[in-house]
Image (cartoon, rainbow over the protein chains, first blue to last red):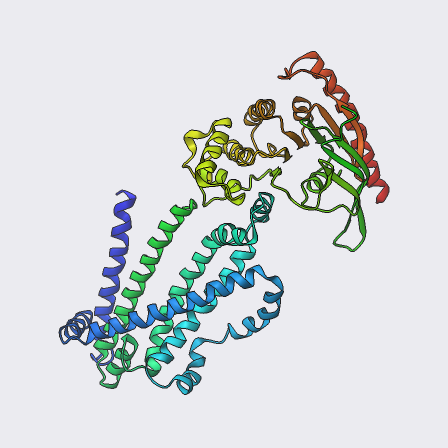
Length: 252
Length: 265
């Protein structure tokens, strides 16, 4: 068997074994404790037919992309600035290092006090989850720009504006991409957490709502969809990264 | 040409560094050197003799602790687009194509895009890379990358080229080829070239003058005038006699350097 076929067959085999184990385990518990795979598929169909599913997915994606873009638009310019001005970085870095290990979830009580219930706390939490990875990778990408690139720019008489926009920013770009990539993952994980805590809509809320009615099949349906959507976003990001990499002449 | 002012003049140049341990080290001591306009001069010497420091001082990337560096009678105060440095690791921008890299210096000068394109293409023609103009640096061999960086320098028509071990990372065959290419370009454009190398054969192949340096502290040991016509036949008798002379002197310097180290211990 060639390697291309193996790449499809092997994961498929894992999937079949996983579903079989699940089915076997489900037989030993009540449907409230662990529903069978078919029940979960039925739950997805039911949620999709009555329309609630698409609403929840839509609002989750909107919150995710809005908060993510907001984090990126703040973190990249700030990171470029702090990467370039070493003294500012030295001043602010300790503060960042203290704030960063605080889980975005820990901000939740404050977020509710400040912003109330609704979109804002969830958006705030996703913002925090995406902000630090992008900020920190941008800073290190700027500081890691090879000295010789800057020497060449200065030698040819490039002004500070041209050196920044046309040497430092593009040179740091592959490093910034890594941060964008990490941030997609952390932001998506925290989206669900944020929605479980305070929102009245979205996939996270859908899971909490299903729990209140002991609809374990819908809980698992929500979890499965979160996983699949997360994978789709990750893949989309990879494709985008690859296209940029080719454009930049640093295809991996 | 003794009545005209030299192109590059170093007078009593001294460069001191504070090492990581906090003690002062003299990289260059009381160094005088004159380089004429349109000359090709090679700096050779064992590691630690300060040859890279000298070229950085002349190119304006570093400042002397004492003494002065003049180019065209003006004191060097920083890097200048008329004096372009070519680095061993090329310094090409990976996100730009070959043509884009060559255009960079012209764009920095603010030359209009049409004129810049003409100049860039002429420079690429000179190094024989017109057919690779839309490639990115990662698609090129080391020798081709260095030719791009030479083209980028030539495009802005500098009067001085500083080359800091530009061919040291290349394989022997490519190195010989690029030495011949450089001489062809030098004869056509007549820039002043200061070429740092640790390869004595390379120095004799290229240099009208070979400046042999000695370490601890960095200083000029000997200046050899290589009065051989170009192109130089590397296997010829005269070439061999210059080579022998330089090698003997180099061994002397090297022994002194080693003795110095033992003495310090």
